[in-house]
Length: 133
Length: 386
Image 1: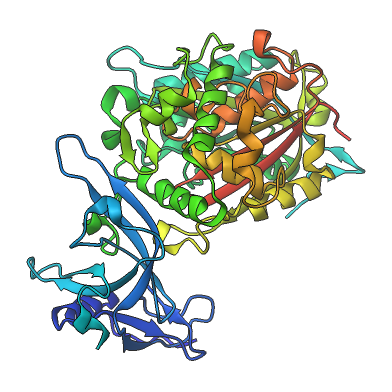
Image 2: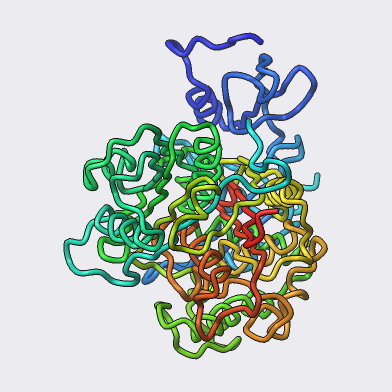
């Protein structure tokens, strides 16, 4: 088991967010090739060192709920199964929330409106014919 | 870890099981007031005194040191205590830990207690949530949205319908209507559930548990001492537990819970199978819970929970008695409801349940859930110690 990160200099969340600011969705890969998410200091079960990787940003909606807060517009919360093999919570934007379906192909984009908290969001893919090119 | 049986007989018995006042309590009522009220009731059933208690078990989202607070309030000086916190299933595990402590001679009379005033002070105040940078910014309403995500997946994989989820709420209401202590006893139809306000799809307001004040307490002692007490002894025959995940994003499969681990462990320890239970108490924080626990505990195959509960199958007069107090959906839900499942199971086994009493109730399962399908803890209780 290897302790791999100097928490006085960087945190798993800090590294993840720095990648987000560059427009990249980062995840971690174990020595045996398992994708790990959320970011942490070692592989669960083995304690082995993890390597940061950049996701291609493509995945499929695995589960979806639409929330109806009183006096506010409905919005969706989804779990996305990424092509690299990890799952994460997010929101699918650019579509009526009630039209988001399990199995829908989605692609990540970064909401950088709060520089303190860059946020990966998803949109349906392909959203235009150029996406297929 | 020691065994809970010796020569095929259960070593430990529940000798007291009591509810606190349920629903909406008087302004100023504290969680510990409710714990103390239920504790006195449970001890009185057995003819035991506060001074007999030397083992103390509790957990709360409202009190940082629950056992310390209750110990101060009741003037106890426990030789053994345990404040294990795993959400609503904590008390099944407290009970198991109490068994091992009693068996090891670390204490002689164990008190397990819970209380909450969450209706009076609001759920948000009673159960503040941690900030999770990978979930909180997306504004899921927790816990409901986590269970809604699981329900969406269950519907996708197995064709489960909103009507089948509604069956669970209607069955629970049917039982609550037979329980004078239940908080919501108004008639409820499938249509009422489907047409109630959508909160986090596919779950409506009526797919969700109530928000009430309440609490409960259990008293346990060794079986040899239980024989000399004034209450009818209920034996703990099996226990299993499993920790799965903290956040819904980390749940390995959204359609199989760790009840598939805790349930078989508990039933193997007790030497029983699902078809033998007279009563099944399942933590129904949301309608999807009941469906998934029926599957994971082996009452029906995976994916068939929706079919299993259809046509009133778990309602009064149905094929399996489930949540006879009315459940978290209609009886009451004071935050961490698990202890009240155990109180109902004990009262059914003792034959005290009036109009909703299961005839000749001998064997009961009580299954606790915590967090967002995060922790699962199962107990098998029976009247026969062997």
